[in-house]
Image (cartoon, rainbow, N blue to C red; front, side):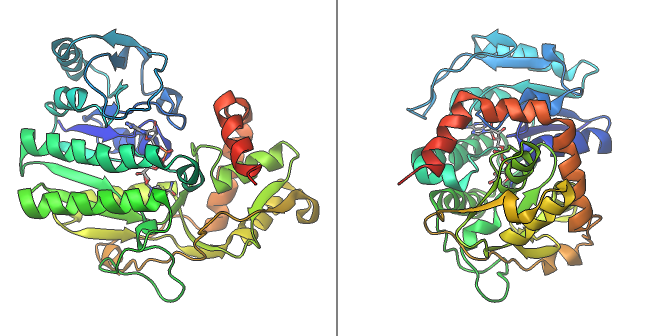
Length: 380
Ligand SMILES: NC(=O)c1ccc[n+]([C@@H]2O[C@H](COP(=O)([O-])OP(=O)(O)OC[C@H]3O[C@@H](n4cnc5c(N)ncnc54)[C@H](O)[C@@H]3O)[C@@H](O)[C@H]2O)c1
């Protein structure tokens, strides 16, 4: 029986990965470690996650100085020994997944949790470039310092045993105007998000080189699909269309992105975990390169709305990279291929948000989301 720790497993890619893993390895036990920031939801793991398996440890010191105290979910546990008892109970139960509501910036909780497994998939991060421009400190603490804590605890408890899969991003290479970045391409991150991720990516590598941590680094391109937080380009555009509002397009909309559907990305991550080599880095590109404006137009067509009235151009984001492009030879040689073409996956994604409109609309109507949207889209 494999026991996995999945940080950020209540977010978009992490939760889809957990759902995949539960089907792929029916005997496995999954401990999701997620602080439930604005983009993380226990609902992303329902019906696999039972409410009695949600635990909030309330001890230890959080290195992130600005964190607001949040509502505690599930069982609140005050001690390290109490938490370990709960995790043991879960491992001995028939359930497949539990959720520990904790931050990667809290070393004390990480120490208690990592004792149970040396198989870690690290998805947890602040992930929205726009937010990183408004609140860079959140990204530096979670994405960089949080990754350091996780590595350091892993080193202390497991040394070179097990596996540490780090989910990085194609954005670490920065803007690639021509050709495609191979894994050894230099890093030129342009936003506080990609710079924090670039720092984390290199920190993981340094822990492999210096301390023999069994790390593998994966750099996916833009992922889309079910359960993505509706501030990101594709789900935001879908929600705007469903609400009868306009899709906001930055600048002239000619920025090119390489997209991978979540099911393909997750299969790719699993394949790299199974077949990848410790100490190696793997790009995980998508199978389409397309301008943002073209994606918006395709979505208008899927929704039946007229692109002339359903799209508006808004002030561009500072340092907006015009193109990302990564070379996928290494992962292809491993046997990776796509099951989904962009258009079919886009339709499937559209239908998911249509079916779950009220859940995502409630999120968009929340005070926190509205405050961010107002601050961002109405900035001078
Ligand atoms: N979405 C993409 O297109 C994409 C592309 C390449 C790489 N990535 C990377 O994949 C990973 C997952 O991205 P996503 O799109 O699912 O993001 P997401 O924002 O949907 O999920 C992030 C999750 O991390 C959790 N989290 C945030 N801060 C935390 C903290 N301090 N401690 C513990 N948990 C915390 C959130 O609650 C959330 O559940 C990230 O590392 C991201 O950089 C994403």
